[in-house]
Length: 337
Image (cartoon, rainbow, N blue to C red; front, top):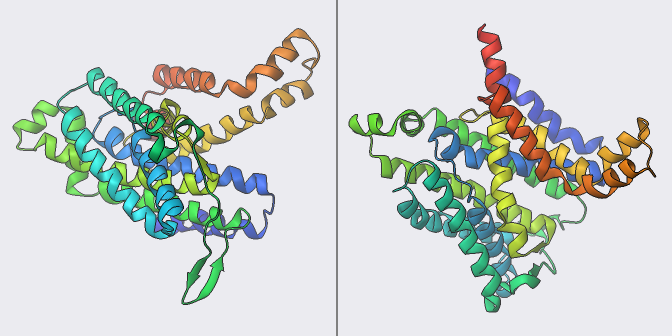
């Protein structure tokens, strides 16, 4: 009965494009699905294992570049290229994890940032392959065919909506399977006390690396989808620190170590960030009585569209002070009371 209740929102989301035809509304939902996938991917290693990586843009960027390079230079269809992208993200995760998991606490966090920055600078300067700062523009995505019948030619938002929904479902299912598995229990033991877990016979490096591989595979898949949906990638877009921070914040604000936490975090952060970028918050303030042509109004109109990172910081401070277990954790605590 409980599992059947989870199907209700899924069915509602699957039927949503039948009633919602606005391209912008579908765009918001697509970004929401990407946020869920990124947050759930980060949650495997950051939430369950307590390894707060701020370098997950390395895996999403790998997925993005690998998929588009295969498409542009070798005419490999994206639905085949994503498997190579996931495999490459896993290989990079194995290399990064074998080095950075020797560190703990803030040193691991700094090492993860450094690795992602190294990859960004490498993509920026390896112009023969990545085209450097000019980036890669998708010229054409081949139509998706099954037994010779074209299912979609990727025109409009609806095909991307359903692929994004499937991506989010896959990420949630992966989290659910990890949490209920022996690996999930080992990762949570490592999160609580690494030395105690090691004394009980849990191989720290092995299980942390396994968690990172799963996390990187999901994140690389999300990065591949973003590249195809946006149609353009460059080092500062897909390998930036902001990508990593957003993935972590989605899980932290929603509730780390929970399956539903990244869902809640994405539902809070993604629409808020998009409303700021589109200056919808500023327009709402103007309608509430703030003079648009005053000094304050001009400042808000010019700066709120770039203030999403500042808002992220304010929200994370509030969460740390008043909701250290995230929105879901606060809700569970009140339910237990």
